[in-house]
Image 1 (cartoon, rainbow, N blue to C red):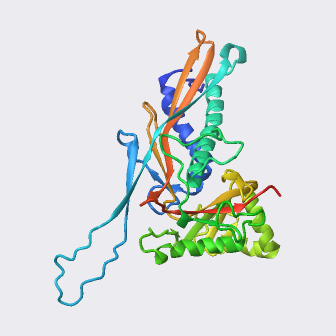
Image 2 (cartoon, helix red, strand yellow):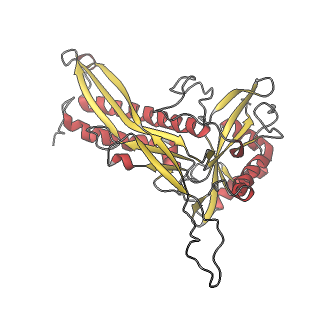
Image 3 (cartoon, helix red, strand yellow):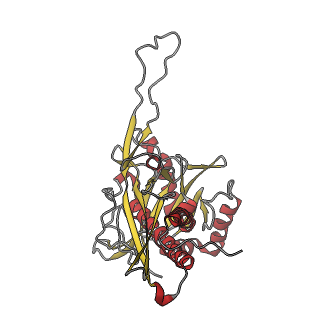
Length: 366
């Protein structure tokens, strides 16, 4: 039976191909595959309120834990109610679009279906990469010097959501460094740095009750943090621990309760219940140290709700991505545009980072 070919530019194509593009983009996205989900037990929480309504921003609250003393015996309880306290934040969304051209249709003889397939493959590559880069910049609170990013090094953020630098309680440094300017080339990623980050995260509220507690992810009853490093930081860590210890770190992740969970997939291993990952997009810098000439990277140590990503639904789309086909030059040139409505940001409550620590270390090509 011959295949039914939907003519190029037919509105029926929009429904099918916008859905296919969304599925493929999610499959290719590093963050979506591992860390994004609905609810507060994900490193990156997905907000979907705008998929069901109108608007350009999503507000969300953190309910602060109760701290007052209980009423004992027959003492009067009336009048001693403790007010529920909330910290609020919001993420703004805006449209982003990308178009591609198949060139002169009569010249290349491609069928409409083949043109759509190629366009979908390249656009899903593009959008998964772009959204991953966007999330990475917001987690770091900086654009950095990463040369292969889509956005230029002058980029300051999307949709009016500014990049937000780490506050003093939510950043640690490699080696003996205590600041950006005091880092030297030897202050690399080590096992001690990771253990220090885990200890710091667990003790934040114990040291300062006004701080929001940095909650770990709960996987099959076990609590875990995640550390996302630049490959150069991961290289330094492997050299720090040695081959035998690195094997034990790998084995710890494989043997962990919940090791089938997606946060463990393709991980490097686990130290002190911290699941280790690497990605080339982790933000790099070249201006650390007293002489502003030390190469560095900002690893991201994540618990719950380190960041949020929010989506709207473009007009006429079947899901999060639009798909629009047009022909030009009197039907001789075929083009396609696809886009989404998206926003991302690191969570901050009461002026402080909430679900992450920044781990700044020296990091240079080996």
